[in-house]
Length: 414
Picture 1 (cartoon, rainbow, N blue to C red):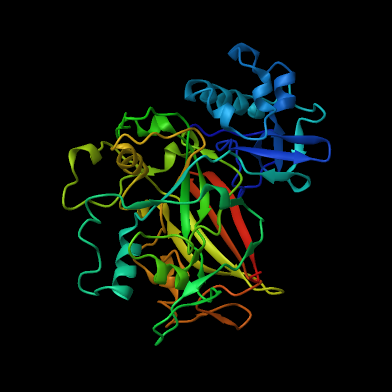
Picture 2 (cartoon, one colour):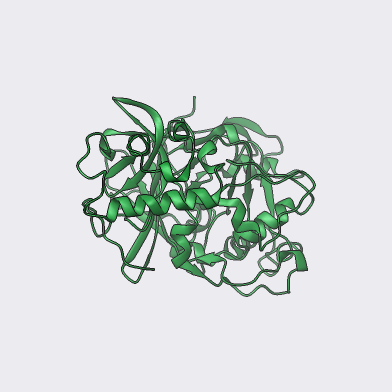
């Protein structure tokens, strides 16, 4: 990756460097929701940039930047969006850039409001970390045979609820549902007392597929626009009672949360790595060539009300057993179509070390190993008024590309 510098002031530890150029939807006191790009502590207003004629050579409809979601922009196709990203990099690195010093071009991020980046049509969540699946199997099934027979043959997933996916900063109310108290034969309806986070990465579909036409692993990246941080909030006690026989339902669909900036695959190319060896060998339609995992550092922090945050998990996206190309290939292998804006989440990302587990279920081992926070309190699951924050970035050869954060405060049940 060629080292670039920007005339915009960017801190060395910023996620939003000239190498990133993530797309999102923002508004401020003067403008309705529109497309912007994060650079350092600023947002580049692409409506204002387009008005200066910076994208005229691409012969696109300039109004595409003045939309409340990215769907129409993504629909321009990667050949176009890649050129737009490259042009933005040139504009932000050229000291004689035509946008430098222009009024209304750069908006302070702290004065802007971020919105959902895409209109999500459908959402699928996977279960693709072998460490996470093994941990769960040890806790609830058989310590000697933790994985179910199908796990190393298919990227297991379920269809979630798109309507309850929210943006960073959105408060989340503790869900209610049926739970089966220990030692009881009949369930009760109550607020969950085993509320959990799940550290995940979500990928956003960037190209429609046609019903009946599978997407192969070698074409999958053409259908993925970019990635976001994803917190798949979970009510473990509700989930435990309801998941047999049809899998996750109310224990999952009350809320999931994403970071507001979509980091493109092009920005993450430098961080590609090979994933774990897959044994037994997968079926032909799930095979692929090259590196398809990503070396992205991930962390989770918990902040009690009035206290300081404590980092409780340090993980990495490279640990995933099933990669995104395999997930998309399997998802569409029966002819299921995907649409621009659909989101698919990785499943909980856990590593081999205790500190790299991506959920409280694992970190506190089903409530048997309480975690200590910096204020002296302990947690086995998430309390009311706790704020949980996910962060992530890649760093290599002095180049940093990050996601910012997704942070949510838990409110009491209604």
